[in-house]
Length: 507
Image (tube, rainbow, N blue to C red; front, side, top):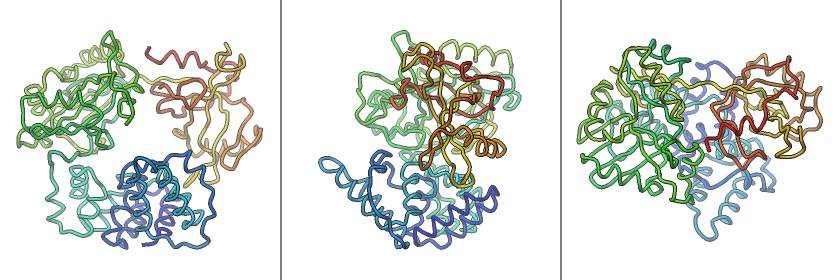
């Protein structure tokens, strides 16, 4: 299969808001793929190459100077082989290998293909081909039941492998995919509610637990062999030896545990999320110890528990990992849930998660059995610039550059605006059209992809918090920023300050 077929399909998918049309387009593409193309194709569609980390970043990509091909000659297998070379490059000379590989790949690609590959490699491909849509497309292309494909994907943790089995194997081979110690499964996800009372209204009797501002982990143990995986199923075992030792000491032979980990400060409070995540970096110092909190048990000593009610799983979790359980209580009482939420927030955590006590473990799914509650923080910030959108947002000004006021001049001139992040989330079609019509009237300059504005527009932004970041001059970046709405009643001088945002950092 040619790369151009994939690129044209992703453009078709991005151009429609119809889920059924997206599924149909992707299914037509999948049925044309040979067996050795299915996994690479799936990885490209999800902007998660099957090789994992390729060792390339935006700086290296933007530094390339190359003329692109006029005609399409690249096959999916050509791209996959180039990705293999990128992922395998290590040690002395690896930078040169990656650079030459990227140069060769860029030269063979058309400008349109290279734009696609760049975004796929950097994880910035927004086509609307999310996992759920692609999963349904796999089911349609293979003529297999959606529940069978979904369960196989959940338990294998690999949509590419699932697609290969569904499209080339028998119905029985798809059904044979099961839970296996040492192979991570997709984590169960939570819906959201505004208050603990609302959450219990959805779940009924629930295990109401602290929601930590940590990193999701899944830990597998077979005898003395322990493996630790991230939310995205990356293996980080070698980076977290303290977690390995804790699980190795538990009274069981085989385990699959679900939980969170974070670092604590001297007073036992949670350190900032950024510091926890720094431990997952290859070159991070080991002085910062991580502590696990487990909240689910999927397998113990030959017994799969994912289809058992949560109450059964928690009883087994208490038995094998009681000292490492996440704080919480089982209740159907709204006042009790509110108290747990108050205690969690007072301890410096994000909020709570209410989990229906009779629910099975739905790997990879966001249903109503788990419901999280976090306080919403909103701030008034100033729009500094906007980037042109892609896909459905082609031709529309979308991704906003956001600035906070610096009245004290700690990061520049007193009264200047300090950039603290970007977001395209929360923008309705109406707002996108308004921005595209309005922003050019405020334009000060532009580059190929960005229009810079006079700082006159204030927008209300909801965030989950901030994290330390060297990317922006104020040393912080917004977490999960989304647009609530514009504030024409406010002037830029009334925007929130960089000092206010920095105070969200837990020292």
